[in-house]
Length: 72
Image 1 (cartoon, rainbow, N blue to C red):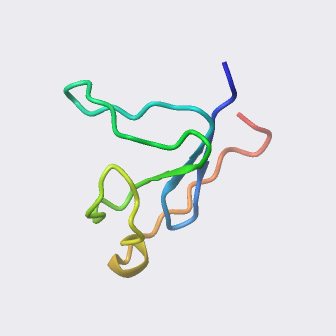
Image 2 (cartoon, rainbow, N blue to C red):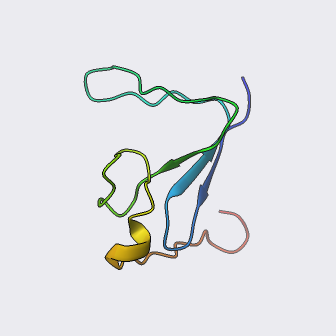
Image 3 (cartoon, rainbow, N blue to C red):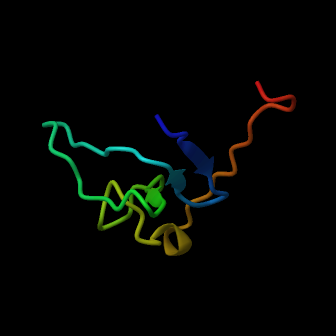
């Protein structure tokens, strides 16, 4: 299994790198390109949810979550 890294972007989406599957509540898979990172919406204003379309830039979304110092 390859490593998956999820990066919390300041005032933006979750950036997911690595081979993952994104499925809806009915188990249907969203098409993704495993060679490219995907951005998942956090602001809830995207017209392409669960994916980010950049709406966080104009809706006033603010979140700058940081992991605890020391890694955990």
